[in-house]
Image 1: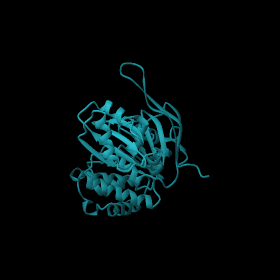
Image 2 (image 1 turned 30 degrees about the horizontal axis):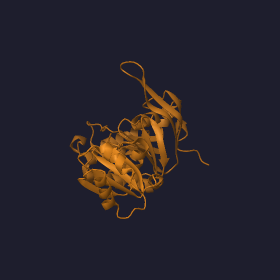
Image 3 (image 1 turned 135 degrees about the horizontal axis):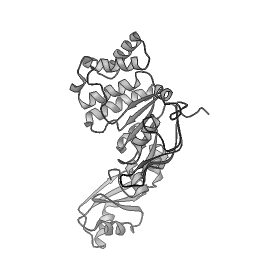
Image 4 (image 1 turned 90 degrees about the vertical axis):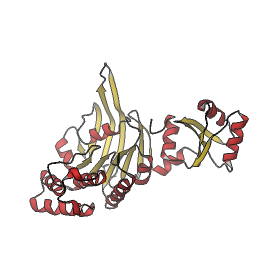
Length: 318
């Protein structure tokens, strides 16, 4: 079997707490990512996703454990590791003293490309990412979606083995998010390996071949999105709203025939079922027999957030 393009073993990062002690941001992480896949790290803010990417891209030194990217030990040989990766961070890192085209051209030169190949690559990337008409634009005038596309274009200009995207669509409007998803799908079709961090379950579900769910620095589950959703054992999730004690309502609904689980999530109770027809009137009837009046019901299929809730008892926004 070929070596995974990303490999970690017991990868750990601790930070000192201001008042003393240590905070473990990433706790014994074991990962293997194969060539050509989109691999998603899904979890709430503070789960350890950004710290993981920081270690894999040489910006954060691990406390312990091992990590290799494209066969290179990221701690022992960071310069060679950087040659093999492209990175798009959460913040806008475009050089504001350069035009859109110049951001691409000088990136190529920085990575050892000759002037002529760098010029050609910059032109090609602007066309590929639908930015050819903004070649001479001051990057401060670009919309959020355009700036994000330019950062992705810059990150792959030197043809890296692995592209790291840290919350790439955070703060983007829905149209810009869909446009970036389309571009990432095209890169994936061309064989680009991508590691993507996100707290948007739809993003991980749509883009990733496999998803690792993280919380508090630990890996909770890892599989394909479909397999993870099947793992909860439910085919129906009902969200219940009521102006009552939600914990008591949740405990009562859990006693229904066919109910697999019931959890308070934010301002609703989410109840999981399998193979239950006519479930809504049954929920209303069961709630009323327990002295609870419901204000709203909605039915969905299990999602990656359902998986996260089943693992942690909270939703991805908490």
